[in-house]
Image (cartoon, rainbow, N blue to C red):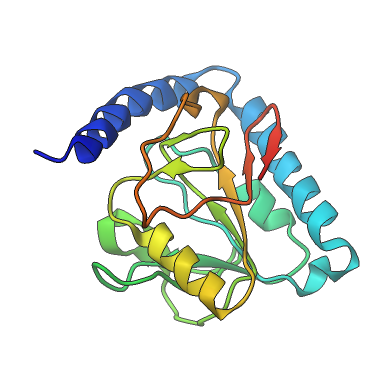
Length: 194
């Protein structure tokens, strides 16, 4: 790995993955998840107001030690979808989700709906490994969310909500030209607006 930026991102991923795992294993994790999901619901309500019932929200099916957005997704009064990886180097697709939808394993072991029902999201809850107070996130390195946010923003407005435990904050995420800034980052203790 000769690229210094790639080296920095790799080192940060390893360090923050350990911190996130500790937060995920904490005895009070469920309280933190509940607080963060309530905050996501508040952020959406504040942003969309009376239009919230018409907003298509994309969440995600939590993997590894990611903070769980399912309570916020279930509480949303409008349609909900989840991302589906359709290929390397391509933006994500989004398919309708509800707690009753049968799921199966997709790419990278992500859970996806068995039946495809494509949707166009207006708001995304975005997972991550790390974030900073400038609105940037560090993902897993596939670039799926960066490509997706770029494409959605080119088609019109989208509201991107980063979702993380507080311990995932770093001083500065190494940023390259393709990295997309988030609109808000929500943790159990706060919402950072950009």
